[in-house]
Image 1: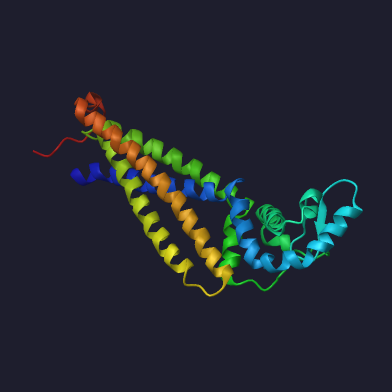
Image 2 (image 1 turned 135 degrees about the vertical axis):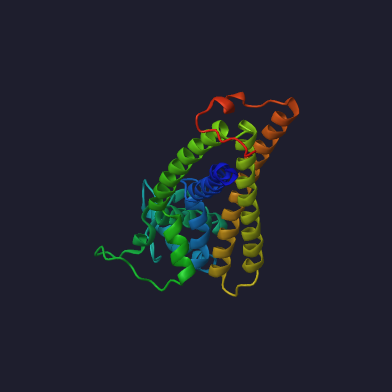
Length: 262
């Protein structure tokens, strides 16, 4: 009997964990964070700190030759454009940031297809597995998949929350306790991943691999914040319920209620 009552509670905790996982994925691949993370990856991947100063004069000449519109950046594996004013500024750091941002946006929109050649064939430049993995998981298509997963997880969590509330003796307190438990587990897992990625980011010899580790670290930080926020809110609400001594009296009237064995 008691195990039957605990099963929905365990499902709710797991569903909360998965909901936060999907939320973190949706945030990391969103229109704001996704291009930024991929832009950070593009800088070492295309060696922009070295490439930009060597091609600044060419970009300035192209900007002077135009009357309106952005300047096409030639010589990179990804076709990008930068504002003419940025190309004429003479600031290598500002120009590098603009190129990285444009490349990140292109990679987010098209994924690895952004490396396609002029004939439309998919590009196959020499990319290491971590880079392919990072681009493949942060592109726009995956953002849609994460949004769908988040919607399903939220629906499941809501249904399980109602089930636990109405079929457990603790009522709302049981639902809040399970939610807090799932959120705390997710926060701990995210914190552990953040720590591992932070350590690894300083141990890689190549800037590209180090940046991939930092991207993982920042995604884990998003998860840690989300888990802490949900866990804190659920824990605080549970404390209020406990202090005020409220109890869901509908439990006894619910047909699915299971009484404690004698």
